[in-house]
Image 1 (cartoon, rainbow, N blue to C red):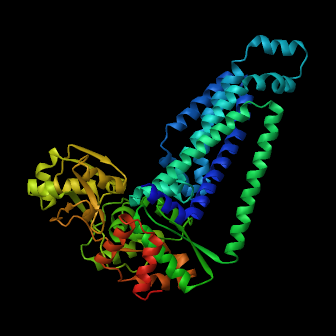
Image 2 (cartoon, helix red, strand yellow; image 1 turned 180 degrees about the horizontal axis):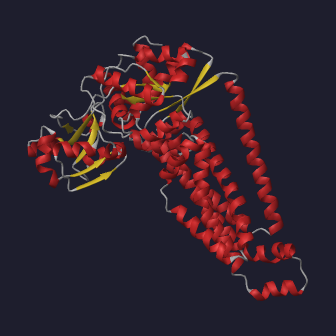
Image 3 (tube, helix red, strand yellow; image 1 turned 30 degrees about the vertical axis):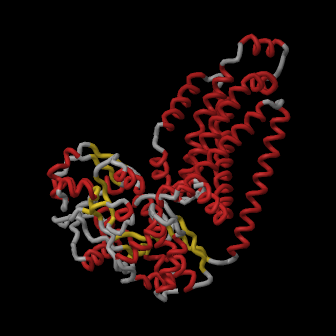
Length: 517
């Protein structure tokens, strides 16, 4: 494992350093904004106890909201990337900073403040000479807690294209790559410990020196940030940037790397920015509608079941044809009519759903179809991908169609559910027919005898306005129409997920082999 980790770091050290810097930048920005909001607020409310308690309750309530829910709410308003990540981090960090500062300022011995007043100290001088110095230990403790929380939570920025060390954590989980997972987790933890130690050291400085030290540190970080931005601008020059995002997992990352190679080969004046492991369907579609991303690969079945609505505005009720060509035409027409979006021609392979069980259980219970599983589902536990668990073409509809009654059902990240199934932690899960883990873990895919699952063929999705303004992008991506067989995709997925090859390399190999670039 140590050798594998060393090799991974040596091959990716420049990208790792960039992710580390992105993580630090997001954390510093969120910390500064938090301090600017929380500390003055605590000072303003220290003599207004009722208002202070109300603010404290609101800040505490915000912390109970799941971070992914906050990110999902923010995307339509502020888009993707650093901005929503910073806003979410600030919302979470305000509570410990405000609470400790407010508590420190309101629990000062009254005799000390009365003595300061008796000496005739003005209000401002009393604040900076008496109250803040006495409250400083509590303040620094709150800041220390908040900074560690920010650095740890900032890993979620990777889910919305914000970068940072979370990129490697997601990559490690999605592709079962322990080296990437360790790099992301260890560096994130090390950064948190370093920041905690730095704040502890700063807390021992006199107030005047503390201010000078904080200002100096802010200037250094700002200078590094400006230098990085200038270097990035010089590197990209006047090229137009096209942003392409993908869902979680190795297969979407392979596809978006193919899109990148095709577009940049067709037009050297275009630079493609990739946002892999961006999250589920709802995150991506919101980002596309708001113009924060330009293209992402979507599947026909998902379009018809989760995006397109019926005449009453409900999703999940649109009738889906089991003929792939008809399904594509219905999906393309619905997207154009309801969202003014352009859905290009799909690839050849079908990455449809199926329920998977261990091959040993399939032999033991004579399981060949989903109907067979339904007969004994009460004694089976299941875990599903979050998308599959909630969308109508997933578990809710499947449960009704087959009468499934599992003993327990929970959600789990895509790659983890396969490991849980192989380790006997669960007994059934959803699978894509092109997933390499089916072969890797010796799983059995159950036949969908009722043809519940609609056709799932992937194709680039973009706004109609973007397609009209970028005919060269459309022409480049259309080269994948009718390409990539089931076997091709299974092989590519295996290389990325099991053999831990880079998705960019695997994508380039396929395109070169088939003369597409």
